Length: 272
Image 1 (cartoon, rainbow, N blue to C red):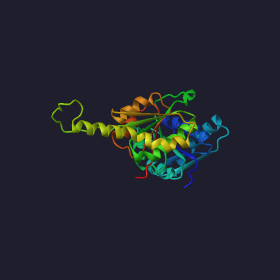
Image 2: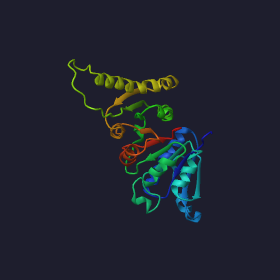
Image 3: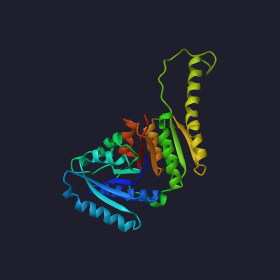
Image 4: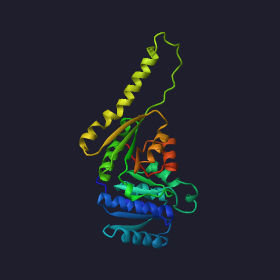
């Protein structure tokens, strides 16, 4: 399927306005149109919000094609459907009505599990500096299941003319204690753990080798981290333009990033 347009969900809230601005920038970067969608129960209620969003965007990005439409249904249902044909879907972490707004990130968390295309989540309380958009793209990598996220991260770094920083989260293993070896660091368990660690540290190097050849102008730094992956990505996010992870990263990783990331988070659906 050929994906077209950047889609953004709006509702008139400050968070949605910030997502709208970011979506417009992403549409310009991709040389595609921007589709502004307002999920409502009654289409007649959408006019003022959509008109305001379209006017704001056209004034700020006069060459950008903007289409603004209302869609009946809940925001998660509507945006999940829109994401199937979108080059990118953009949402804020708050807003979408007075009830959902009480739960920071409630829409983005539910949408993360249902989006059928790349999803960019923008924190509405994080000011940004457009002059720093050349900061690194950070990729959270855990194994072969992240191939699609890796492909997207390389493309994103190339679009931004930015370096790519790959963080490979090492699995934490709990092993049964064994008697100390009379020869230091040479017990079977120690040798096995050392072999496992070497193998894990090699995963991202083999996994991104082909992509480095396909994107020779993207500077790449690969780093294995032994800490919790969510917190490692949070730390890296302070110096990043965006953090990219596979959408299969559920639970604490996704929840922590969407709640606390200092930069936008881009979730890429995986094949599994």
